[in-house]
Every structure is written in C-alpha cells, then in structure tokens.
Amino acid sequence: MPALENLNPNRVFYYFKKISSIPHGSGDMDAIAKFCTDFAIEHNLKFIRDDANNVIIYKSGTVGYENSAPIILQGHLDMVCQKTPESTVDFLKDGLDLYVDGDFVKARGTTLGADNGIAVAMVLSILESQDIPHPPIEAVFTTDEETGMIGARALDMSVLNGKRMINLDSETEDIVTVSCAGGSDFKVNIPIKSVAKQGTLVTLEIKGLQGGHSGVEINKNRVNSNIIAGRILNELNTHIPFDIVSINGGDKANAIPNRCIVTLCTEYADDIKVFVNNFYYSPLKNELSDREPNLIINTIVGKKGEYDAWTDEIKKQIIYTLLCAPNGVVEMSASIEGLVQTSLNLGVLMTTKESIIIHFSLRSNKNSSLDFLEERLCAFFDNLDLCYETFGHYPAWQYKTDSALREIYCDTYFEMFGTQPRVKAIHAGLECGVFTGNIEGFDCISVGPEMHDVHTTQERLSISSTQNIYNILIKILGKLK
Image (cartoon, rainbow, N blue to C red; front, side, top):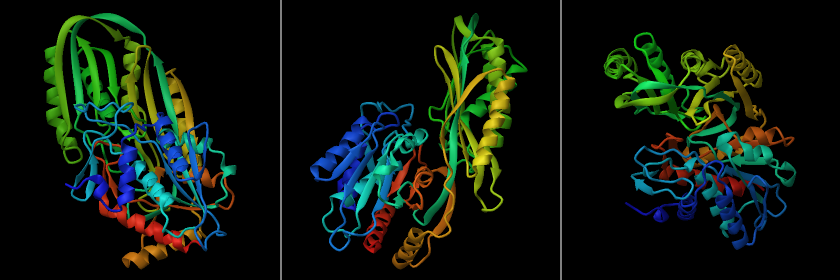
C-alpha cells in the first residue's frame, strides 16, 4: 500500500498526515492552532490567532490578481474523537494511525478526522504554493465546530475583507451545498440520589450499531443505542425487579450513539439474562435486522455485593425519558424533497459521580421550528421536574437566489466532468450560517471530497475525490479576478 505522502495531490496528503499526527479533538485546540501559526511564520504570511484559537492566514493575490476581491477559504480545525473498545489511542496525547485501503484513507480503530482535516490540508497546500493563480486569500480555520460552532461564533468578522467564501466541509463530491440547518444543544442534569442495594451486578452491553452523524445520517433509520437501552429497561421493569447503578451511552451529542452500557443490581440475575436474551433474539433482533444487522446485546453477570443504586424516582424518570422523549426525525421539509427539516439526537447518556447527564443535539432548517422543538423538550422535562439548559445556538443558512459563486462552481464542474453538480440544502449544520448572519452581502458555497461514515470508526476519505475537488478549487481560484 502506498504511503500517504506518495498520494496525489502530494502536498495535500502531506499536510493531512501532519494534521493527523497532532491531537485536535474538540476542546483541545492549542496544538493544532500553533501548527497553523507556525506554518504562517514559516511562509512569511500575515496571520491572526484569537482567544478562541481561530486562526486566519492572509495571502496576497498572485500577479494579475492583486486587486481582485478576496476569497475566504474556510474549514474547521477540530475533529470528533471516537474509537473502538479495543483501541488504545489517547486522543489527548496520540496522533492517528492512518493507512490506505484501495481508494480510501482510513484510521485504525478511530475516527479519521477528514471532517475537517482534509479542508485544512487543501488550504495549506494552496497557501504554500508558488504556481497557483489566485486572488487575495483569507484562510479561516475555526475551532470547536463539532461542539456548536463555538469558534466561528466567537470570530471577529471585522478582520475579514472577503464577502465570498468557499467552505470545504461537505462530504459528497458531486454536491454543492447552498443551505444548511441551524441548531442548538439541550442538556439535562439529574443529581444522583442513591441507596445501598444488596444483589448481583448485571451488565447489559448494547453494541454493533452503525452510529453516524446526527445530521447527515439521521434519516437513514440508524438505531440509537440509548433508545434500545430504554426499551429493554422498560420491558424488564414490567417483569423482573432491578435497580440501576449506571448507564453510559455515547460521548458526542452530534453522533448517533452506537454503544450503550447499562449496569444493574438485582436478586434475579439469571432471570434477567434469560429475559434479555429472549427479548433480543426474538422481537428486537427480528425488528431491527434489516437496519442494524450487527446489533449485539451481551448480558454479563457479575459479583454479589452491596452497590449504590439510583432511587426509584430517578429510575422512573430515566426509563420514561428514554421511552417517550422525541428522538430522530421530527419533520420533513414540505418544499425540498428528501430534506429533513427538524430533528434531534439523544447523543449522550452519561453517569458521573454526581449526576446523570442527558445531552441532545437539535437541528432545523427553519429557526422557528428549532424554537418549537426546544419548547417541547422544556415542557417534557418541566413535567419531570428536572433541570436543563440550552446553549450552542447557531443560525440556519438560507438559500441565496443570486449566488455568483455558485454559478462559477457549477460551470467549472461541468467543464471538468461534463455533468452538472447537484445543488442541495442539507440538514447538517455548517459554519456558513454563522458567516452569512454576520457579513452583509455574503456569498458562499460548501463543497468537499467524498467521505463516508464520518463521526464513526468506519470513517473513510476517497483519494481520487480529494484530487478532483482540489483541482476544481484551483481552477475556480484562477477564475476569480
């Protein structure tokens, strides 16, 4: 298999490998921001690094383009960090183990971070070039996009001169994205009230689900492991006595959780094992086999002893939430065929020493629909007398009817491939909405190379598609006089 640095475009994959060697999970931006500023210093380019670790690098236009209007090239620095149970990677210390498999770049045992490291790599390759004609470039690398576009929302837009932008955070080569969802986070915090219980520890391990991006894959009928946990607990609760010690499913609100671990204390461990096996192998397995063929539910019987378990009140609240709270697609668009308009994802269900955390990621292509979804959740948890907060709001990106940049891109794509790209609105959130909401007269598009299963350990990036998008980008820059 070829080494990454031997792939084409050579410098793009060179920088992608460099980026992948640096820890850059959301919330851990110092090292990757320094890498970008060191690059700017090395290449004698003006730059800004702000308090949110956003980095802007400026490059003058090449000969003949000096007085052209600037173009913003934009991507985000953070990645979603997910790994397999067997992986020993420490995302705070270790780089990724990349390898080539046919036309794809992958990472062993972890997410790849091509969302959005490949964008940064493309832009760095252009910034270092001496032979690519282009107008003045403002390369904007934002932080913590995956956790609510925190960097973009903190960015001082007044330092930008450009009013047109190519965002490189899309994942399908023949699509140019022109509109996206807004979103927010909704987090419930339940203080743990525990009682000492005598019994046998029983662990339910739900795994093997596909998971995926809570925007891009939310309409693909992928099953949420936390919801399965709720179904099993509700069914158990009507037949066999048990107490809950802990539940942990998912660690990113914007990723559909593919694994959930439930720990119980009971005097009926063997009965629970038989019951769960029967429930899994008969109706549940049969129901989900066409959507989740690799679903596994293990029941592990542990030791007898005394354990701190949740009170009956908390147990009831959790089961009711997992059974009845909205999750998944809420409504489809009436005007754009196939577009999810509003959705939410119960991405995190986590037990700490002090509390139980329930974290939803909400999305909608209409701001009023997002507001209504928040109101529904508020009413739901008010009736359970639970505390919650909403945060991380980012605006929807509305379709622009007269986009010159969109027309240039579509024309260039046709010149190169003989077909028109698909012009799409998406349900995922993009930072384009933040920029368009802050810069008057802004014109932007979002494009990117072919990627699959982002935000999961199956994430992969097409090598040939990366080359295609990079070549299109270079050709478009030459047209922006």
